[in-house]
Image 1 (tube, rainbow, N blue to C red):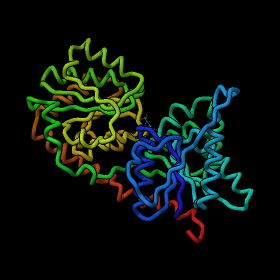
Image 2: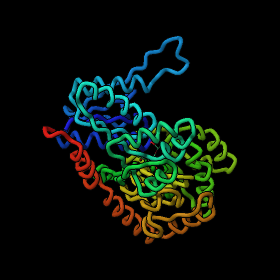
Image 3: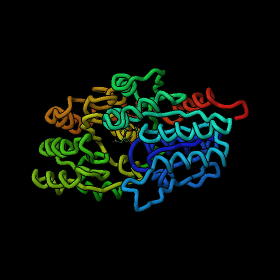
Length: 376
Ligand code: GMT
């Protein structure tokens, strides 16, 4: 098949998922055309089946707000025509679903239909999409998609709750390539971070308020009081300065390392013992799944789709949003009991295997084939 993939090219979960999906489809012989405003961060390989089309948004003095969506729809039209695409798979509703609708209408004038599949990822529904400024366009373009998928049951339910959707939403869970994590941890790296064999706690996110990154530091400080450990903070974003200040105020700054945005997340996960994700909401929590693939148990909130990924008392623990004491206590229980820790590491890995790329990519292929022309 010739598939167009539209996503945000950044470190965010939706972009990571879309890029990994495109890479896997290309490995299986499909031609995959990424249409984005920048090379996606995870698109770090050369493959004869992968094409990258950059959306350029020309500036003009009149434009206070350059019309990205128009440029995106026009690029989609070009790529559909030039490469005879069979379908468009857009990740994140805003503005990708509406741009795809526009491209489809333009192509329809030439007598062709190009089906559009929209995958909802989370904040496009729960935060941004609900906003009155966007809601009518989001509702319309979701309903106009040939197929709609959501990355968890919770996100599907939230979408029906917040929008008037008159179509079936199919749940296709996020995935992880477990084999990528199946390598020896880089011991020298572990020794630099934790020279005295301390346990390593890790968090990865875009440091936005929805992630409650301050809670990460507070939970860590509580654990660190009972047993010396180190905290790796992966990623970057608006709340980082606040959190660095908090780490200083709480006297744990020397035990916390902010490593910024990292492409090779598996190297970090492989040396870690515990992943913290105290978010206000996660539709799924792809970062937690990536940790689990590296045999790292998770302590998270029970918000959104997290209970579909992190199983209470099995792959880690969950507590209510903001319940720092409970999450800190769970951390102490887990990291001070080697037998329990080893059991949960194994459980976390087994749970990740259920979401392995080899189980999920065929589900997308099956979905595509429902909308494909006879010759694709
Ligand atoms: O977590 C973010 O803020 C980034 C966001 C995105 O759109 O890239 O992530 C969302 O999509 C991920 C992939 O499907 C999910 O794993 C995240 O849980 C989801 N984030 C939220 O729902 C807040």
